[in-house]
Structures are given as structure tokens and as C-alpha cells.
Image (cartoon, rainbow, N blue to C red; front, side):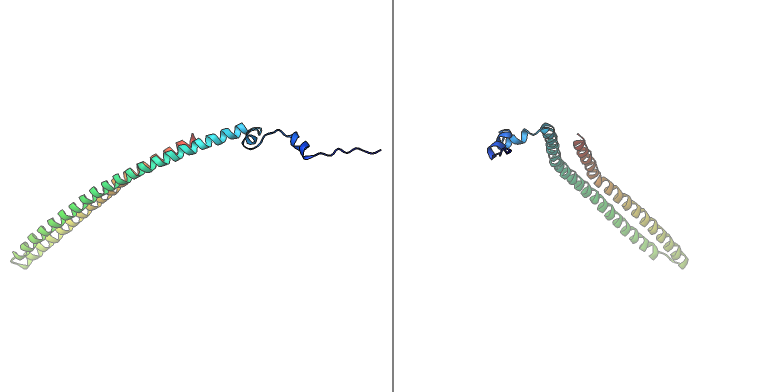
Length: 163
């Protein structure tokens, strides 16, 4: 007895599968709707994230400009305070020199010199404290807008990614 073996042709194999080609073949795959939904949502999140990033760039630049203006104004105040202190010191040194020249005894000269030295030291410490406080104030105010913008950007990015 001879067994009859059926041979399959290419045409037989092609006819066993649905006639779907190209773009349609992808969408006929089972469970494709779920994958399409995930990809669409991811695309929407990415587009929203990039839009937010672009608008944040503008806001960050504005915060940087605002910080620059605050720094310029604060630095101007520091320079004005320094110049004022220098003028005051020059006037006091002139008065101290006249006081020293007016002394008639060695004892009077020593007292005047001690008094001038103490006043100069007190003025120096007062001026140093004032400049230090101004510097801290300027630094704090300068970085305020940048810190606020950074916090805002982080919050927006977190909100976009969480949505």
C-alpha cells in the first residue's frame, strides 16, 4: 500500500492566512487596541511635557532677567553705601588729624589718639556689618525669582508626568 502524501504549495500556504498586508496587518493583531491606547497616551503625555518645557523656558528666562535687575539694584546700593562710608571716613580722618595737631601735651595727644583709634574701629565694624547685611540681602533677593521658578518647573513636570 502506498501512502498518498499531499504536498502543499505556496498558494496553499498563502490561502491559509487572511489576505491582509501592510498597514492593515498591524491593526489586525489581537490585543492591538491596548497597545495603541498605551502608545497614544504616552504620545499625549510627551507632547504636553514638551509644550510645558517650552513655556517654562520663557518663564525661566524672565526669572533670570528679574534676578539680574534685582542684583544690579542691590549692587548699586552696596556701592552707594561703600562710597558713603569712604567719604565719612575721609572726613573723620581729617577731623582726627586736626584734633591731633591741636594737642599741646603728650598726655593729651595719647588720649586723642586712643579716642580716634576707638572711633575708627567702631566705624569700621559698623560699616563692615552694614555691607555684610546688604550683601546677604542682595544675594537672597537675587536668587528668589530663580528659586521660585525652579520650584514651579519641578511641580509642573511632576504634574505632567503624574497625569
